[in-house]
Image (cartoon, rainbow over all chains, first blue to last red; front, side):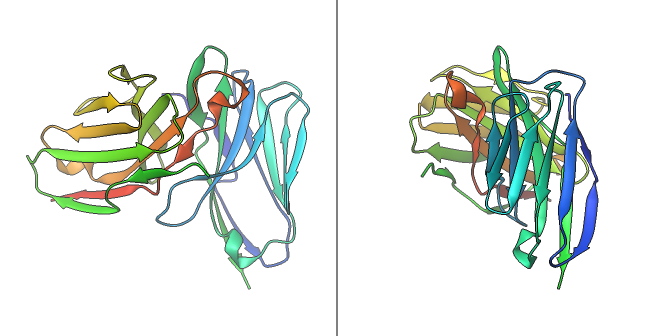
Length: 111
Length: 115
């Protein structure tokens, strides 16, 4: 099945640093979602985006729906140890209720 | 809050056993999904259902079947478990239609080991 290209695959950063990750697709989506998965748990929704160009924040997290509708990015500012986990993007929309997921970005934060 | 509950966090089964993974959601969602997650392969859709007794194959349905007898419950069945089905299994649910239809809510996962 199709997967979205998500980069970087992994990041090792120091506490307090900002983080940026992105997702690209060859297909157009009507919805972009960002999830976080803690070790041993299921993914939890962080941000949902519904309109091209939309910029949405959730605390220290900011995500944008690309103008072309083929990409999205997620920024985390001033990272803290509990930001550790795997971040997934997902695209959806059109005549299907299925989501296409990115390959994930594994984030490690060192104190 | 939406709650998706998977009946087991950890399961250990033997090759050839029939395995049932159960998932229940409490938000009256029409859609329910089963994924497996393996390192380096991301989330892969096994089956989904958009209504009671309805099911659609996902990307990797081979070796699996599903059952949806009630709206809130979606079961994944491994007819004869094999070692290559050792994985993390995730259940999710979402609304059918509307702006929020693509937001899927996940359970905590079931880590299945087949020996």
